[in-house]
Amino acid sequence: MGEATIAELIRRIDHLEAQARNMNRRVAVLLLTAVPLTVIALCLVVVTLRAISAPPAHAATSISCTGELKANAFGGTQALIGGYKVDIRCSD
Image 1 (cartoon, helix red, strand yellow):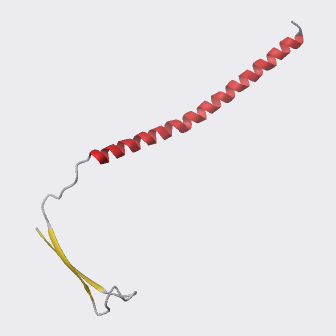
Image 2 (image 1 turned 180 degrees about the vertical axis):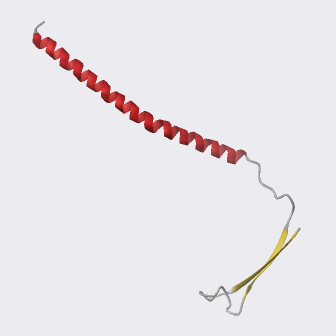
């Protein structure tokens, strides 16, 4: 083996080392993006499962409300003046 062959082997080794460093950078970038995105996805799954499994909300007591919606003197057509009277009454 001559010096040219040894020099070629050294160049190849340097090239492989450069490729390995480049690969390490790619893995680091992948981890820096994949890990947070995975955590976000898991949090969304937990939030969704809690929403699905949560019992429906109910009022502690029953309340009954009635109301009326009446057009006032403007007939409910005036753009600048509301036009309606709302009357709501609630009782236990």
